[in-house]
Length: 240
Image (cartoon, rainbow, N blue to C red; front, side, top):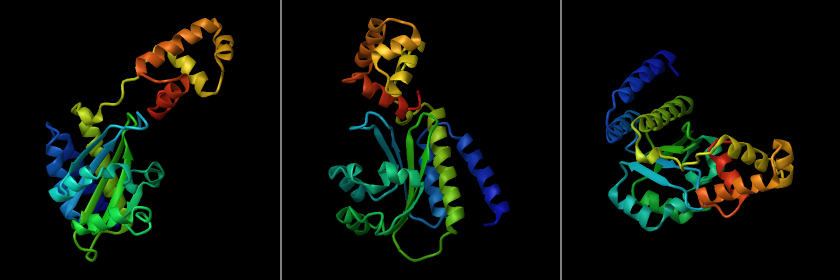
């Protein structure tokens, strides 16, 4: 990798995103950057960590409309391996038969719509929203950048996209509101440690009734069935 060329590109990319005043401008930047990387299509999927069973998901994409219609109609969000938490940890995900081994019909459908070779880069926003920036091409052969440089460019473009959307207060970056008082936060932290209400009361030098009051209040506030789920939500978004 030519470090000088990469850092010049990085400065130019930063300037482009800093000049953005409307969220839709990001689409044009990503499409142009995707083409410069020798790919045909891009997608930027934003997924929030909570609620766990129905996480808020947003998609910006230049994929063929026929594929987008199929993706939504079949609810491929639920099975797309790129969006799995364990794959997110890996960060850089080249599309291959191994990645899609459990979703062969999905993989076949994607290739039938022209998405024959692709790579996804996973990034995280400061509010713990997950971003999946993917690029794909209609041919399996052809010149692309070395893996390390391509990964760095995709990662930077994904991070800039999320940060710009946050700066513009775009709805896609609105996290589940978890506004907690100091006392509620303290109780949640100890709940996350597995402490009982009685133990938390002793630790914080308050009554057990007070602990239970705060826990029930938080359950109502976040529409959670129990105190454990509230603690899990708070941990997922980085509050505790």
